[in-house]
Amino acid sequence: MKIVGQILLACLLLAALHSILTAAVVAFILMLLWGAMFRPERTLAMVFALLLLGLAAEQPRVFILVAGAVIVLLAIIRQREPQTRRTRSRPTTPPLALPAPPGGAVWPAGGQDNAGDG
Image (cartoon, rainbow, N blue to C red; front, side):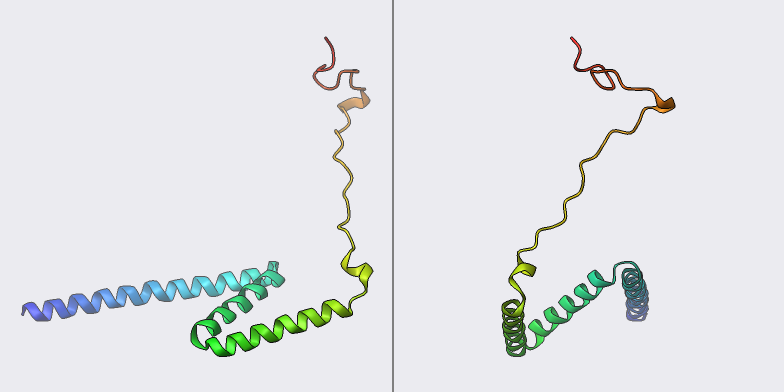
């Protein structure tokens, strides 16, 4: 009778583990859908990285060949780009300005808290 109780307890624990893993998979799929809706480029990059990591774990030789091909293709693409496109700087944003005071008033010479006086 003791063995039957242990088997039932093991079945109960396995069923609970199955439910937890199922909920985790559903949550992961929902997060992927959420990410695909709001940040598709980052989500696709993450999925691609996960696929590459899985490939590296299961088939290391194929991963080395794929990674080498990607590196060669990126080098070829960079050489074909015009020089001005590679050296383009990021656009600059204007500096932040203080908001206007309410009612059309003018700030005193020292600023909002007269820090320059004294």
